Image (cartoon, rainbow over all chains, first blue to last red):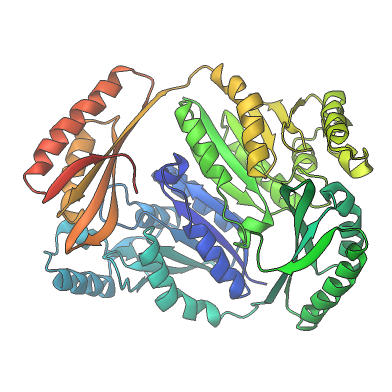
Length: 266
Length: 266
């Protein structure tokens, strides 16, 4: 198993001015890579808060810690320096990061100001990740067997660095698992009546995770989407998921007004 | 100052199947009440994970901890029992919670099954909060000077309990602050060139928080939204914000291709 934690840095999210969609996008990518996201944090742009979350994450010993936000040129872009401080790593100007920034300046016809140059300061021993869309390079740090990836908060830049620099480094990690999921929409059975049925299947087929999502009422009938999923290192569990689906649908067919496979929780 | 932490419980968010919008909604409500959100956590439906986050939150000594998710009737709705376990509080059947559930059953013509009755189990000393939309009552716990509010994850139910049960309890808290914000859209100045100007204002007007949000490029011009905000216990700081806005806009007018007030970060 590979466990990841995602840390979103930005006061704009804590104040509700921006809806964080970065952690959702990252969670989807990681799940599809067979990597489990165990916790997501949203943290203020404050040195002590970032240091605190870094120490908390390290104590939880994940394999990966993916940060997004706070990598730009302004005074409150302090993610890199705060993480370096928490890990007690010195900041040094990285020649590769500087090259990326210089190239972007030339492309955009902008001078290499001090503020831009600041973005080339990364922890000693860290590796700069090319940003194909904006100025701020990403940063990759290996620390105590934890892979730290620091990405910008601008979604297009985050995705660009993930796709071109992070993904290939995750694909070679050992311990990735298989993931498969199935959605079943059920009408006419209240969630509380479904609970004992789900519990029975859950106890019998332990690796299969089953969760009911109540979707309210439509024309007097309760609507629930059942989500069956498995995160497993055994390929045979993928077949088990199929079997559970068939058996569960046969049993619920007798009780539900309507039951059918659907694509998602929508 | 009143600090709050928000804790979202649900594997569906960690796996990226559901985009969490609850924490954003809560963050907006809290901000407008003059309460600062200091951290947001998304946590797995696993007893040890919920216990771990409760201990972490307590150690950070916030005034409020608002949980959402995992209050329903199914086996993986373990938020209430896991928090009780972390706080070493016994679960007891609460007569008021049971009354709310019984009323909802009667209204919907459903039997009071064991699974439904389970939702009336709340920590000893806690207070049940009426859910006007669904079955699961919310829970209010006072523990070590921290107000814990436990709300369902279904957005309509969460909002209902917040509006009718939580809001009035927050409005009477002492230490709430004033909040005001202004958005300025600027075209034609790169973020790195704006950085030293922002820093100057930031140093001169310390309570005012200024953040630039790069919005990409439009017809060759960089587009940035500047967000000025203040969270303060001094009403005079609201006027200070106005003054900073005027002075800053006058200075940037000379450098920008276009500058104007806007409503939001969009």
